[in-house]
Length: 314
Ligand SMILES: NC(=O)c1ccc[n+]([C@@H]2O[C@H](COP(=O)([O-])OP(=O)(O)OC[C@H]3O[C@@H](n4cnc5c(N)ncnc54)[C@H](OP(=O)(O)O)[C@@H]3O)[C@@H](O)[C@H]2O)c1
Image 1: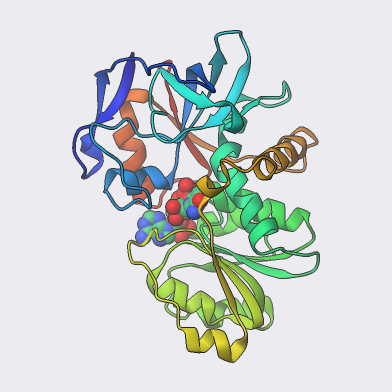
Image 2: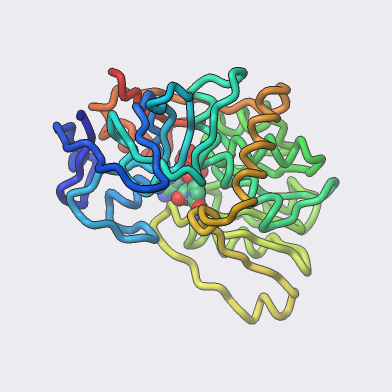
């Protein structure tokens, strides 16, 4: 089968199209003919060997696909690698039938990024109606869904994004205000936009952005950490946590894969929201499988909006 195989860690050029062996069958798993493979920021970390879970080489990246099972079901599912390929093995606990109302491109936007956005807001931050929440990379995969889900739940969203076009998009998606994520005075800008310190924030950049976002929290505020796209992990200033009674929580989606209710609950809520028109996955560029390197280059350059995917049939 055709697959993107990494034989070393490094820049986008380590992603090469090869003829690779089919995945061996495993109990509890279904073999899927892949149509679209989702591209996620996690794949950039895997390629550079900075991911939370180290991988062994040679390695086929990609943690989510949409495709068809041998018995003709159209499914979307999460994997632990192996996604950038014509065929992938999906464990039945993290595989869902795609409702007819959704396209493949919409479904693949929901599996990793949609479930992450949902659990960050509603399981980790426990966001409630009327609260203000900061959402970073608000025009990106997780962010564009988080803006919509939070606004739909009656929260006031302060979106962070790195360009004027992305900030306009975040406002169109339902954000109350949009702030330049790269600003050195990010804390003051969040406070201005929100009208004061905020009760809840998402954080996925790390380094100075973590510190600037934490500084915008109100006493008893909550912050959920789920990434370090800037490449620098942040340290948690425990004195600040005590002084202001702050809560900093971590989140990594694979910790939910074995949970029997968490992902089925969020996946159902996401499918229903798309079907009833109250959530619109922002589908970004779809690249041919052989152009995975270009997708990674674009993602690291911060230019894309919405969900990036690889068309495995091209
Ligand atoms: N913990 C988990 O389970 C989990 C699950 C899914 C995603 N994530 C994390 O969530 C974040 C978003 O993931 P995604 O797949 O949805 O990607 P994405 O948001 O579509 O793309 C990444 C965005 O991050 C922002 N960014 C900030 N600093 C950056 C930098 N130094 N280099 C590149 N981008 C930077 C950029 O937006 P601006 O230019 O607008 O700032 C960029 O567009 C990533 O950090 C990812 O690792 C974590």
